Image 1 (cartoon, rainbow, N blue to C red):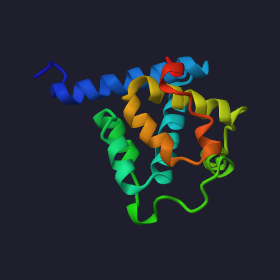
Image 2: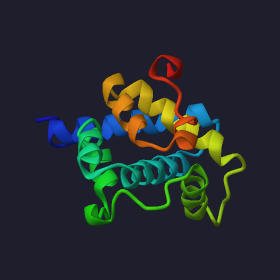
Image 3: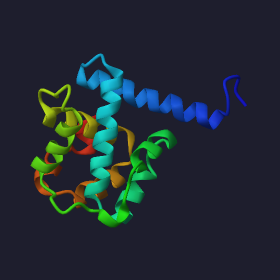
Length: 147
């Protein structure tokens, strides 16, 4: 056991900070709270655009702490959402940032997708992308392009 607590909990907290820091760097925001909120919002939106089986497969690839965020408030019976267009996805992100709007939401979403492509196995990213509508999938760079 580490000096702070359980090693597995310490490790997932550390991994989560790494992901948030990397996303914040990609965005150039210098606002880790905002970057975390974007990551959470995009993860949950992606989850709701996927079939239940694929959502579970994707969630299994996330660090434990982010996995909890990903599953927060999930209602599998309502997924995938009916309105599955890029504009609907972007609107959902914009809604979460109503009080501090993102200037270029599509670019911010792409930054999250780049992070996910860099952190999650390419095969899993391919499965996720396959389930997304083409217009939204266009925002997700191929895993080799994300690094």
